[in-house]
Image (cartoon, rainbow, N blue to C red; front, side, top):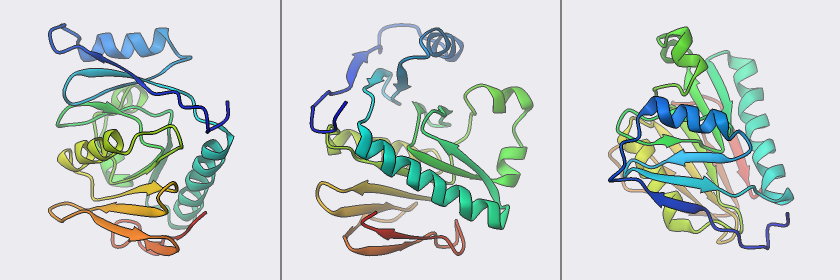
Length: 194
């Protein structure tokens, strides 16, 4: 499906519906062909698939973080198929995520197997042509509210990146730019555009 076809996510308001974490997990397991998320506000989001350009960019980003992690051994890398149960609400799937090894090891085997109840230390969200910017910015705020240490919202359409850090104003930087993993991913560098 080309990126130029606008397929928006379907958002269902579940505020007045009792929907436990276990029920959400079972719903996702019963509908593996769908990418489901749940916002901190209690909305169920059915995400559309991405096109080839976005899928290729996402794979490249995950590959770069994975390669850096292979060299450093500092944590665990996760793909966009991973749902994280965020401590301050929401069940979210970043396009790429990384968790420091000791934090990952603090989870039980069952917690690691299901939707890990932890916020990644680092996330990347990649805006595809069909993504509205505001929901992605709200998603980044959910990560920050749950303990995110560094996050990048890559926006190729506007040729910029939004950098999210705790207790700081969002920094917006235009392409071309070289991003640093700072103290969260020491030595990691990403050159944009991809």
